[in-house]
Image (cartoon, rainbow, N blue to C red; front, side, top):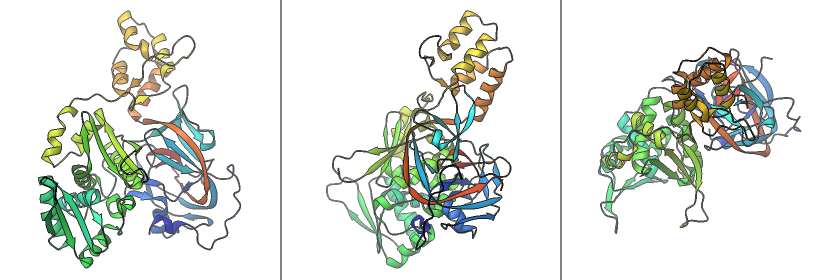
Length: 456
């Protein structure tokens, strides 16, 4: 069921009871589940509760991942009626939509994890993003990995029409996949045409309304333009190996590589948002989603998803390319360090200072940590950002045991990514929902650790 179907029809919207009475989220938020990446509205529909604009609590067991990256079953699914919501946007491009009372896990000024109501979150705060789930997300694909590779190619380059699918490409590996895997999956050979003025580029036309509709039904897709593309429910429920094959096809066909950067572009923000979350939860890869200016089409919206430095290298190691052209372009990506602007830990200067002050420290060790300690005057922000790599080196030194040292170890083991909030804005009222998580009272929302409903 498309998300627009979750909106209430012929329902009298109740007056918003205010932010203090309930915390809840919207239907279009991605949840992380052993069943794959599921929108809130999908879960309520699949379980029979219904993604409706009502007020009710329904005892329901459904597996979701909690803040620790472990699967936990819900106790209750809650329909919270129509309420005013807010949109929180982070520096990496994650978007959270929830009511003002919804609590998100942040790291406070002293380096401690603290639940904050959305109404208390403002630009400059950092949300905790869980990127450690092992291999427990998703299910084994019904399609072969070669089929899924072709699906990724189609998602990137395909014109998804009523009566045909059209693909154009000049990469020999991609061209072979279109002819061989595409023919097998669609059940019809493509007509192939040379593209005037395009060296080695060929156009592949799969002309069959019946066959094309069968593929759309198989994948949960619909005929759409480029801005309407999405992964779809079938691809979102894939496990790590299955989504890897899809991403290989998508990036082989769509990405550009420049030095230590891998980037894909699309007219569909929703598609890139889903790819972003898939990279994060399946492979621990942090990517940056931003709007892209295309001077040739100033009236249209375009988006880009970028992997920098070590995140791009992690993509090579964990996802990779099939295209020899792409592989050759990646020589500059090997051996990259994690980008401190992406993978630093905020607000821990006081902890590093406390660890240093509670130990016998020689000059060499002091020099090693001083840039990560709080400054004594004015702005106390440390001179340098503390990355996980540098924290590992600090923790390997000999220190006196202290609460601060224990806290730094806890932060290192958790391996959260801390995503800075760049905007919080009010949105119109819409149907809202929540999940009761009886063990940890937490779930993961678009990658961000969020608090669930309390037992009622």
